[in-house]
Image (cartoon, rainbow, N blue to C red):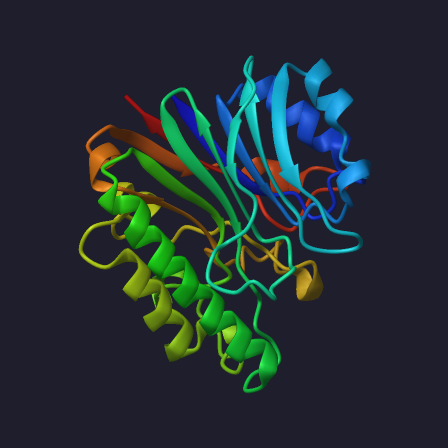
Length: 256
């Protein structure tokens, strides 16, 4: 079972890129983030034509998350992260696909920090931790995939001081991610590539792609009941080099 996560950075503008990659890679499940499309504008028909059923939670102009399933319809279980009824940002969706509970996550960026956006980021990540704990306790096989907007360690960012004040690398952000992982969840990319520098995002500015000045922002957390099925993981880095590409590349895991 091949599960991927891809911050598409505007699903309609990059639909051709997405469909091309789907045809090449044929992932069984895809978690998309940053749709930048409202609920009615999501390209359901085009993705159906590519062989994928979908559930999605859109939002005009920004945010938005979706789950695609090859040759199947995901069974929607949740369209928002619990814990704050006033939060109307489309950042979390959850569905069952082929016996696995999959979540597509688009955590807040948190910049500028300090400030209310950073406070929201930390509060959101703590809500994710609580929900992840609840899911884990069910014993179900769970994959929490997406753009966490956290660089977990210095190994997950190119050597640089330019991000020193960025919310992505702050000690509070890293500690929040570490608390989510805890002792029970497996960071799949890091488990497979323990000592390797591996990036999933390259900013459009300052030739960061050309210089391979990347960050690992996109993660898969696996519950104990599915972690033992992890066979391989990686990043389809070449997708970032294509014309009109997102600033993220698709990351993936293979489960046996």
